Image (cartoon, rainbow, N blue to C red; front, side, top):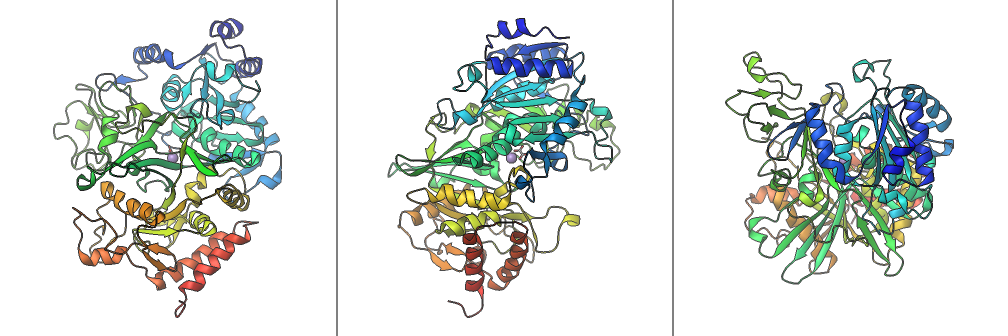
Length: 613
Ligand code: OXD
Ligand code: MN
């Protein structure tokens, strides 16, 4: 049984509510010892992890770990939002009554950390001093040391973040117990895993994984699910799975900020870390604030929408990250950054790492290379096409390692938001960019966001997997109320930010080539959007928004055929009419969707009818 009080005293953890919480869970999980950690413990924890063989060096000051092979991704079907009120059940939040969940989780967690250390990780999801700081404090309890290393990179970690709370009880209780990974029946009828956010108690109980969003509880469970619920319950803010960037026009000195949501595999991290194309690099600078989460609120003083990234790091997908798609990401995991790689391929002799898409072909000399499961590549049968890395393999690095991190990324005031964009991976129909100036139409666009289904089995030809605001896996309260909350918060803004839908992935019907070069060139439509907002261009009104004319888009140095350009700057009304029918079905699922959203839907549908002007 752990000796608790001296460990808490030694760490200077005096908050009585935190102490009570630690005591309760230390006793229930049966942990052998407890250890309170802060960011300054990182070097020691790294060393202990290396000595224990949990991580291995992957170059100078960079590390590598493998997760259990059945534990490599977030598990949406085992993820639950629980509250005390049935009225909180939505379509996507997998709602259950809190009373059931407490019992289930406690039963699984009881004694499950026997023989292990329970790390106490006090953290803050917000820059210190932020107006939303009171929603950002939490204490993760975890029995997995690699999870602690990730938390130190992904959140601000230290006792100081829970010692001076205005209300000592106002921290998120985030309990993570790994469980016996080899005996949890993952994916079977006897699956023991449960990932539960008891949202109205601000308590997160995750059992049965040590991976990513299942285990780093500050990030998704707190930063998105809990925070979205808190933002709604308090009526004060939005918490969204959004990237956030700044664009500085060095000629005029103006700085713009754009945030936005993209379903997974739609290039959000690449966009967030984008550099300007060479031809525009003299004039524009793009700065990085965050690639995954933004909290948004209105400052009553100036009536502007503000946003900040509550995270402290990046937990990025490694696959296809290379010099073309995201050179910034590669620099942010260079020697000396303290980055951690998970489930990529690893060379045990040279300590190099590799993942699919890092280079066009895998290393030719396979000596020393092991795949993400730890198997030697050299003993694979001839012609094996098994990937070397897991498709969801990751890199974890702190924000400050990103070379174009914004100078003011820690500014507690956040940054004023000029534009909100949505974009999925859509092979047809969606133009390069369409701007939306009406609030309800902007929110409607977010609610009907989706991406092409990625597996044939899931997909119906031409039907998107809808992912409202890219929040489908993180919705914590009913979608109708979510839409109303968006209208309420953004409705308080004196000057509504401009909305837009973007699509970098339109393909040619015949040979399938991408019509737009993408990556750094994606800055061009965003610059047009800012010009439209400023009234410097007017674009062309269509039933689904304002599109740039060819002349308005800065295409200096872009290689694109006139035919492809026409295609990505036009609307296929017939194809859109089919989409509107799918949207109607999608929205009908949501009870209590505000009338403004239905009115926006009907307005757009009517404008798309043949003969409508
Ligand atoms: C996610 C992530 O799961 O960002 O969306 O890791
Ligand atoms: Mn994400």
